[in-house]
Image 1: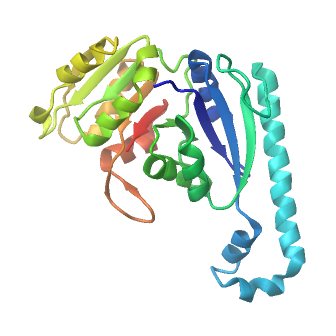
Image 2: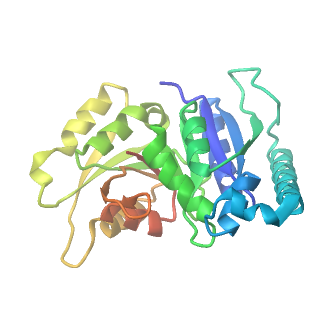
Length: 292
């Protein structure tokens, strides 16, 4: 599977620089197109939110001036967002074009979408190969909604960018393997990325279900795809969470990217990540490749 289309979702007030940097460093290795999708709420949705989810009829006294002010704010935010992308493209030497013209070059496109994040990102993500999002920031609700949607609604791999974007994201990929359905899906959808990696290490945490699956079997599978991987058993000491142990090991091995399945145990708001996944999401410094 070729990874030709990388999607970078953004919104008003969001700095997408780290997402763009990650997309470019992968894009130049994969000859991939970087599609930037600016997602802004439509005025009616904003008005309903302002009115405490009241019906549109009850907020009509806010009149046309309110709608015009909201629309003006969205237009200004879109203009600022596109100007920021143009500046980034200029710095990085990336062409910003209206539509794809070549399959052997990396370039960026800009699209403006209006509506709620979840349906917009779901539909856009399904016609791309990889969705690149930022780590959730409690001060910016878009970041958390984008990660949730990318992981659980799109059906494509998601790359969550941490605090650091390594110069070569594929220098050393560490895979957290537990034999789960989610981890298996991630491996199947990410063979192209793994094949490009200079080094691949599989860490298998010694938990109560350790004997049910073997990292050596995954190594053998990857070898059929021309990927040589090293398998490492990861001991988990008393008082240490699996998520913390995985991040510590990734750091010790100077991983440039962590790959793991993302799973849920129950639902709160829209989704509640499982304990290991949540710890990694909240504490990682490097990019994390995930699939559900």
